[in-house]
Length: 169
Ligand SMILES: [Zn+2]
Image: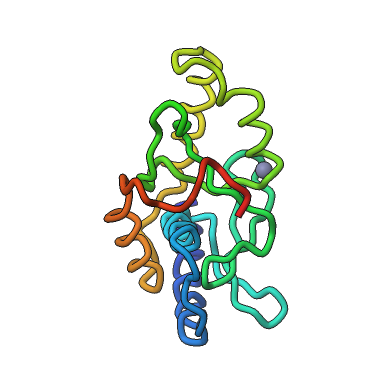
């Protein structure tokens, strides 16, 4: 299994370089940059093509349905930034607290659990599960995404970050 993962990563790195070479659009907003930083640290995201456009395709943190992100960070499929520990309870923009979710899952969690008190057992259970999934997916970013990851690390905690709580993006 480890050998398979290593092989996939090698292929991903090679194709990711191709994406970097023909990407002309810079990220258009801090939110898109943050999305690229999440993509960079989530090994489910691999380089692919959407028509002729180079993209990243990975999995929703909840349901694993495919999420497609343009090379400049713009979501092509419906994707949202998920705060694993909810912002309403003080969750911040550190990368380990962020994941990408499809709109359906993000709304579902928001509707059912984010409003619960921060010591609610079900909320804590969901958060623990998401943290475990995020940790399992963690990777050091491929070279073309390293700058976005560095930016997001530096920017986390900035109060003027433009993304609201789990907005559709
Ligand atoms: Zn989902």
